[in-house]
Length: 137
Image (tube, rainbow, N blue to C red; front, side):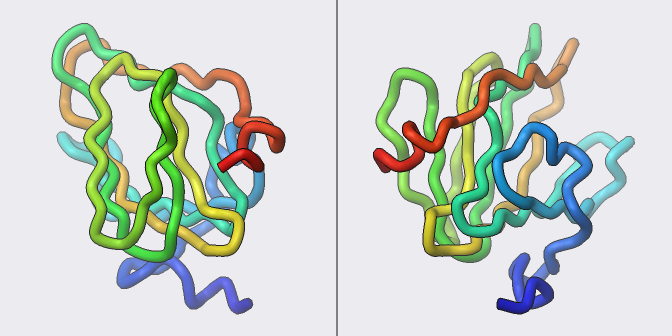
């Protein structure tokens, strides 16, 4: 499959500089100024690619929003059942919530990702989503 045909209307961008926190290949395209008030990025995952469990910390405000724009994927919050995602779905992730997201095994997947502004925001990268966990989906 030609990688240039992925990423939806925004295109897939370049190899993700946070790739060490992903299983499989992902791509990142910044859509707004990452030093600005509301950085927005298009994240594209090849089939089976997913990020590690992670937490977007904030002492006030914060949290993450995913707007699915192409393909099919998964989102899972710790302690909850995984959610199937398709283009048009929106996921609001509260601050300080451990979660992961990525592509289904047979589909490329792209979503826009942004974090709500907050105080003392940081991202904590945790353990990978193992093949055993992923294969149960």
